[in-house]
Length: 242
Ligand SMILES: Nc1ncnc2c1ncn2[C@@H]1O[C@H](COP(=O)(O)OP(=O)(O)OP(=O)(O)O)[C@@H](O)[C@H]1O
Ligand SMILES: [Mg+2]
Image (cartoon, rainbow, N blue to C red; front, side, top):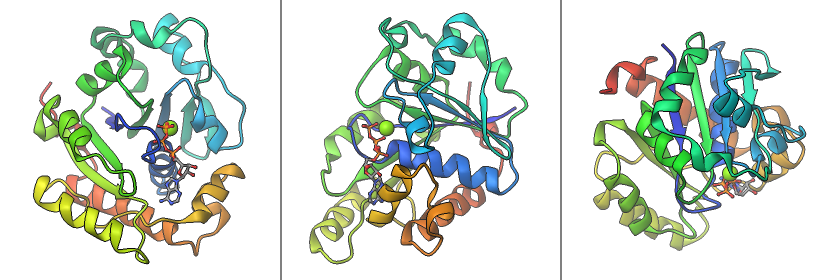
């Protein structure tokens, strides 16, 4: 059974897509079989890999046609993109559970989500084994994260990952310090640092390890993956109580 991991925060611009791409890419680089599902009609997973939009997520969920695109060795992608039919408002937990048989041969299934609330997001949060929540330390909303956490069984929350950490300013240090007592035991041990090269890499359709392996984000994302895999084992599926 694949490990299901959803990356979500209701706030926009928290770094969900960047995190989804790097988790999927990093696990695939380690030789694990990964499927990345773009659950956001903005279609940014495709853009971040320099690809055109697609509708494989919608076609899979709505019609049951599973046709992922291979984007790197060991790494398949179900793309999304702008669509007129608001399909994401009609996805239920039952439907996801029914479709999950198509994912059984992967080691990891990573799902990028749209900001905000939708039927699809609610179904994904109910379906997933684990959740990672990137939090923008510059535009931080503790209330938003706290609200999100109340909607979830605690054992499903793998971690809150502080993002855009900037050592040069006291502000992000202060925000990070304020998060620790609010979410005991839930913060990832190291934040992802602010790294302009990361944005550039996405514009070029590359992961940070492909564009500039010396960038801080290259280390930070490897650390995050190592923490995730060592802390929770390679099989988080057994933690979840379905
Ligand atoms: N650690 C970082 N340092 C600098 N820039 C970053 C970092 N993480 C992400 N970014 C950039 O911030 C912007 C927003 O990131 P991203 O698109 O991943 O967020 P998102 O949560 O998926 O947004 P949305 O809610 O619109 O889907 C992007 O331009 C991305 O390249
Ligand atoms: Mg996104």
